[in-house]
Image 1 (tube, each protein chain N blue to C red):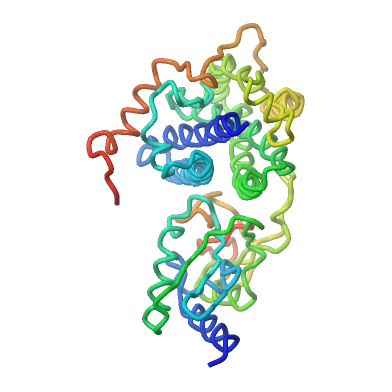
Image 2: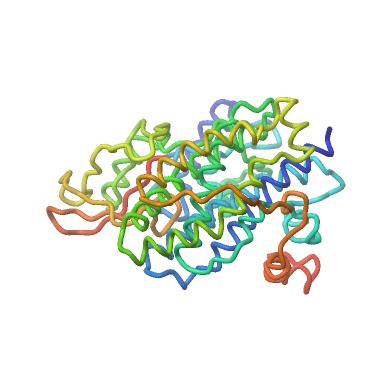
Length: 250
Length: 164
């Protein structure tokens, strides 16, 4: 059971870490100052959440592991974040759609974790949901503003939505460890989150005058460590310092 | 010195430790000091961080230790406690007044649990002229805990400490 719990918590951390890393790439490059500050602030929140999950993973693993070992010293196949979160920033529309699709999922996931029988997970969720709720407000507002905006903004956000949609199915397909952890009352059931996610996403898309893409084909793999070619580049950037100067400390 | 006096003394000292990002507030004003324990050899302080990614998280234990060390407490342990989660409702009344005087609008109270996506939050009053005719110009600001507002009456931009 310990093994599955580690996998489960580590995945929560990986999602937060990789999204934060992607958002951090915007630092100094945002379309306008407010959006630059917003994205880096969201990155800071997710990085903080990743730290809490990894501190817990390190504690569960024992053997003098630290949060830094978990964050920086694993191989690509050992990271189990959603494929959605490793997708490129591309432009403001892609970054925003990725954020929105994940924020809604993350919010309902954390809401479920507030009832976790694991006191540490429960405590982390109570802290993280405050931040994620705020991110969700931000990304939902922007979906509506762009979707129901000009012809150009509508087209850009619809294109991003169509392209990223194939990565949404993965959120709701449980892995074996997720199944077990959910049955034990520690984790959430992602199948139960799907209707809540559908309801909220549909509502925002309708208000944004955006078309919900068809669920014809979905890509899976990230949750099992099978990543797209993008992941290696992210890790090269993320792990550079620890790989070059092993054991480096601030 | 009795133990209870000792704890009172430590609490007084903690009131002099300022938040590294908002130096008009003490850690006590912020409501992040959750418990202070003391025995013969050791002082143990429980601290609840505000935002998860706030850079001050790693600075605050050092500031606490330094202040207490200078006052003669050599063995100080600072623990991070996660539960219950910090809320801006824990900022003291005194702290709210200090924020306002510093030019930051204090957080609205009791709205941190609001789940509504686009609820009409109460007006944020301008800390400079007191007008409630203000507008949010950016949901995020210079630190994780603040947003940017503008006053439509005196035209001044100001920071708002977000309700969390």
